[in-house]
Length: 383
Image (cartoon, rainbow, N blue to C red; front, top):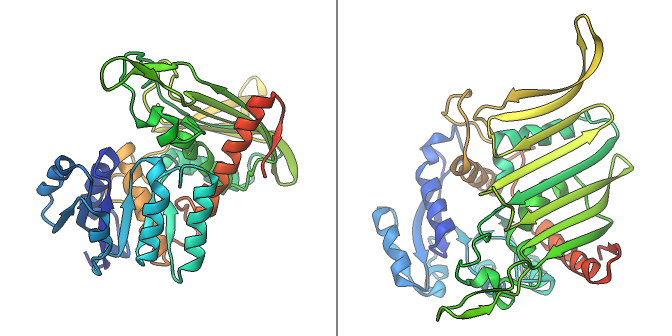
């Protein structure tokens, strides 16, 4: 490849670390991308997690100490996927080491942590930081974003963005860090999954002005390390009803993040409906985008219609994949990294980008307002 060589380091060799490593190996699928990334280093406190990366011939450093990885002057970009309570220190260390950073959500365990990370960015000349959120990089999601930006909705009536799992419906599932407040944070499922539901609304300019949070702690105990019941003290499901503004008109915006949504595995959905049009997309059917329009039906007259259109494979950055083929999660990961590295290189242009630090920090204010609203039973302002 002829693009600029960029050396990547990963801190956190778990599920998402391996997914990112696989995406980098698929880089030749991108057409004329300005960057040629190479995974060269991996850090994890568990030596066993590093063994998987031995199959990648470009990796020349594996370590259990993140300071060793950050001290390597040849590493340009670092991706970090660790527990939420570890975000603040690792992110700040990475920024101050002069590395570009793709950070995992929720960008610190709480608002104070996010603000400290923002301060480190401001204090570090040339710092480039973005936050991971891959679901909006499905082609159908991009179609939906472009539809809204086109003005086809007219006056917006309502919008919704959801992210749904059923991974916690099994009450015998052992307790892990995502189900413990001290590691996951007071926001619970909102910290873990909420960025997925706010990336697109915030990028469209739909900052909530006041909101109502409806939160559920459904499974309050899970088997601990010794098999005995242990407290499971995070929110399992969270629904946020808010008021936002589009083209000067207020409208209701709802987001849902759920770990107990029966029948779901990993579903992201977006819907926006207006007086003149509407658009829907769900990863349950990644090929399909639904568009609302008024149409002339022969022999009947003017009618309302939800029309189904196949989106194909092309997203933010063009690929060698046939345009008629469907896209999946791994493709969305690849597109997210394509957008991140292109933006770092100053070549993203007007294309849809990864989450900005200020957007990630704003979600902590949203989650705190949702919790306050849940406690009071009244609308809360986002401050």
